[in-house]
Length: 145
Image 1 (cartoon, rainbow, N blue to C red):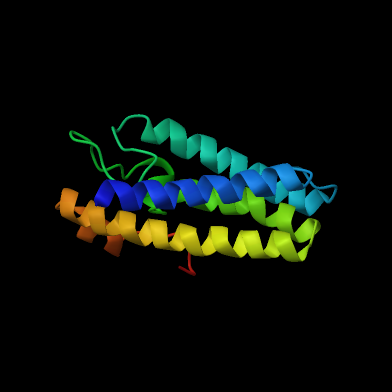
Image 2: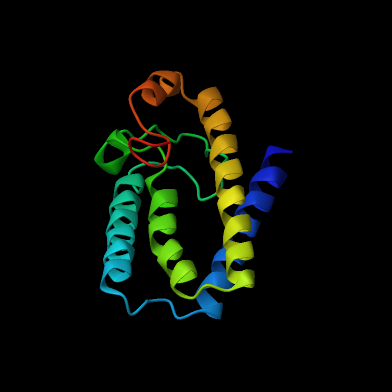
């Protein structure tokens, strides 16, 4: 059941991301928006490089033998890859505002919160230190959430 739920949440994430990336120009013409997107790219690459030291998965279900990562961006944020996606996609949606774009982005955002909440439940079961780690990090957005 965990694998099915995990797969569905991941599939929804990728479908909504694909729509947003294919329906609109990926990079905006606004310098501030481009700066936010660049920050998202840098954060995403940093998080992936650090995460590659673990055996964690793109789906919320941790693999056997995976380890808890608490270095790099994970020292501050429990889900920096999700934040990187938000930093990259938010300017795309709001620069090219359409009803469909906002609807799909809303689905993406709700799905992302559901996915990270589910992932945290699984990480609590897999790692004894995760509860302590939660007390010292932000879930997604520093100083906000």
